[in-house]
Image 1 (cartoon, rainbow, N blue to C red):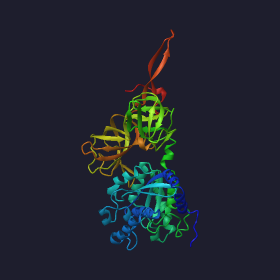
Image 2 (tube, rainbow, N blue to C red):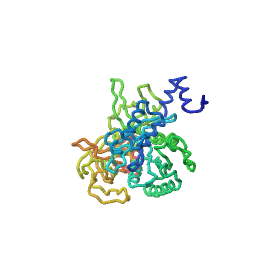
Image 3 (cartoon, helix red, strand yellow):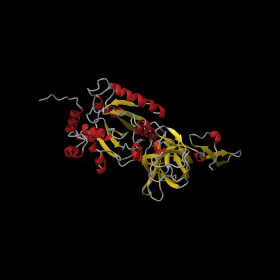
Length: 486
């Protein structure tokens, strides 16, 4: 009988389950969650890599494995070997053509962290699907076929991942088994990609040689690449910093989703904490009205909390009866976001029908929905060359910069600072279809950042009178330039 390694994670987990199932479930519940995407060109092995991750993390049931083996022999592309891509590519058209068309989300877990991975299409015509998958991701795995090197679609997906705000990038040089695990070939691809990454502003990335089909450097170091000293893919995914940790350091923001009014004695404001932390006694400001109060309690189904942090869904109650509705944003009183109705934004057009300049669309940002008009684009970006091209409109999959104007002020922050209050979608008012995804850069008018505050003055006779006094609340408006709202 083989000796049992008592330090092995599987042994430790099985022992914990046998001894204290409640402790195991509690441990699993409090694991951090990492959302990531796989992207790159066609046939770079994105679906195969995800299938391998699911297989190696033992997230496949016996009946699923049996079906996978049967499907691999019938429609797979690996001969008699298991075609891991079939675990993800479930559409008939995907299996027939051996490609990915729609975004597929899969969950898996290791001893250290939980994961949701999105498999995105490689074809240029499905770029909008890739943007959808990337919109909630903390990390992007850019796959490159070691035989083909950096391709046009590799550049496109890298640019989109960077544009959408993904700062953790893994350059996975796949199919190393087909180039005899050549370090020279790996170094050539990394050097080529480094030059491109620097040109579009990607500060850094983690390169690694892998084989999704053979399993090299996926869950552990491979003996086939002794020259590689970096982490395996799973090791890196388990230790990279998640967005929630970054969001905790930012000022408090909570877009109000619902006013919770179960009876006459309770009125709370429910939503997901986007950034920062909040606790009873903290001063808050409700925007766009600018009304202030303090937090009375942080309520959840399981009872009141001493503090709520980014990523938690809670209901806040206030010490004062102030107006607050769905679409408003509760923020830290001393560091509120901006309010405006005119912006410069980047748009990724996702509809078959081209953008109509001057037409009114619905704009949805966090819990806010307003009518918006899009002006003629300032320029479109040629993703292949990064050149700015003059255009009159935006076609399917086009990326451009334009000015937009909403019919009433909205609460926002630049997308680079806050993805929740800076990212939006445009919806066609007739078809109700999502036609574009957008990222706000900055406002073109900031008068709405000034709100009237009560100021008490005492006369020579000793009487006191309260006046309306303008006070700037936007972080980009100085006290010397304060003026009343237009």
